[in-house]
Length: 121
Image (tube, rainbow, N blue to C red; front, side, top):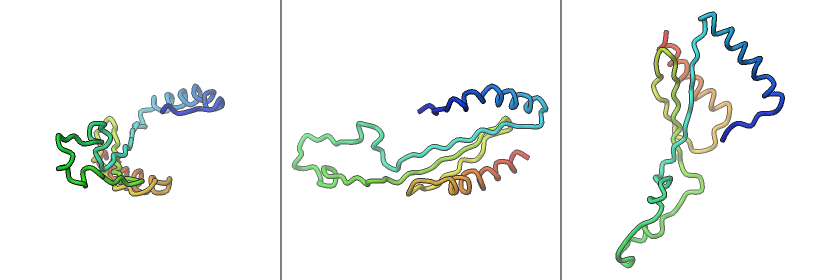
């Protein structure tokens, strides 16, 4: 989903872009992009993996016919950073619940980002 901006945020865009541009002209900044993605531990995102096919339903094992689903399936968080000097090592974390801001900064931005910054030096 595209981010939703308030009118005030939209009005601030030109000012912020000019400030970023002037700062980048000094050559004392290096942009670093980072992103994260969650992947489920099941293969049910592919629609053809959600069911089963058989020529004889009576011989199909019950664990295939009646597969249990977790309400909140486990996920893996993958985080990576990119700069003009290179790409960070991917950071993986098993996610069992919703991640909050403190955990995100500590686990994603903190140690993996620090390691990437040291790698660039």
